[in-house]
Amino acid sequence: MENPALVDVTRGSLTESVHRGSVAIADAQGKLVCGIGDIEARVYPRSAIKALQALPLVESGAAEALDLTDAELSLACASHNGEEVHANAARVMLLKAGLTEDDLECGPQWPQRMEDAAKLILSDETPCGLHNNCSGKHAGFLGLARIMGVETQGYIDPSHPVQREVRRAMEQMTGETLTEDVCGVDGCSIPTYASPLKSFAGAFATFGTGEGLEPLRADAARQIYDACINEPYMVAGAGRFCTRVMEGFRGRVFVKTGAEGVFCAAIPELGFGVALKCDDGATRAAEVMMATVLEALMDLNEDEAVLLDGLVNPPVLTRRGAQAGHIKPRPDFLDELKAALP
Image 1: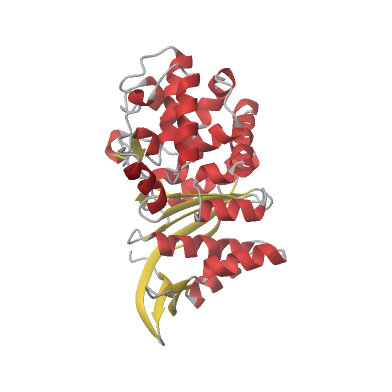
Image 2 (image 1 turned 180 degrees about the vertical axis):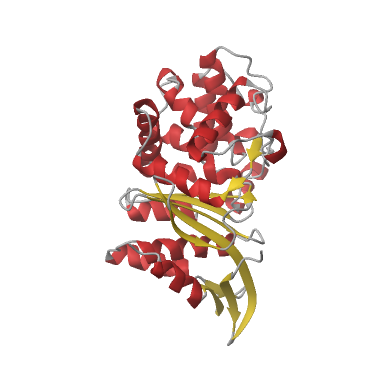
């Protein structure tokens, strides 16, 4: 099944490129509100489901035992820029667990922004695991391992007790059985399990509302949600879509990007969860897709409308900053979303 074209990239008066994709919107009972494209196909969610991967950290009592702040818990759900504030927070998380950056098994990564990379170069330093965009998640895994009283080395392996706890939480939230045949290796070396988009949408509806969850898990989900919306800068950083949306919507929505064009969101006031994927993995199109979903579904105030307008129709710029075209949702994509409104 070929997914529909959802996003156009224009230059001048012509469409220069087209992005295909799929979108699932579901409620907390798992009922599909809107399905566009093949939402039954299994996709790797990558970093879009870090908030779900953080559930064992909180519901086990590890986050409380380690005295993690909202900023640190938010970082545990982050795909951050590798800015100094992110690296330092990851370092503190490790110190609270009696560990150091040498215990991280995510691998080094240059900071995303040129200015942050330049600071390292000018200081005659190279990036380490703390700068990896997943360092907060890994610091959370290590903290959980310490509180569980298990070996920290090899915490990235599918058979490690930490990863077994994460997989169990994912299975319970998505309703999917996650077996070896649907397991891949994420960029930061942990297991990533492919599931249908509709199952991720249902999981995030439940995550955002707490409906149907046992009290311990509902409380953990609320703590994670609140931490991310209270400290959205830690989830991503300067100029990033996730940070900008959560700052602008002030608690109304949780959004999280993942590699290869995946996005997930929770909209508690509507009781909806959203999961989408751009087929070619383009972040530029995935962001337009998610912004379009939010614009179509939500009742916006003036500031929110202005914010989303810039994210739904971002300009294509020349090297000199002049506008050459737009990235924009296709009209039939908008029509399908509007038809799904309650």
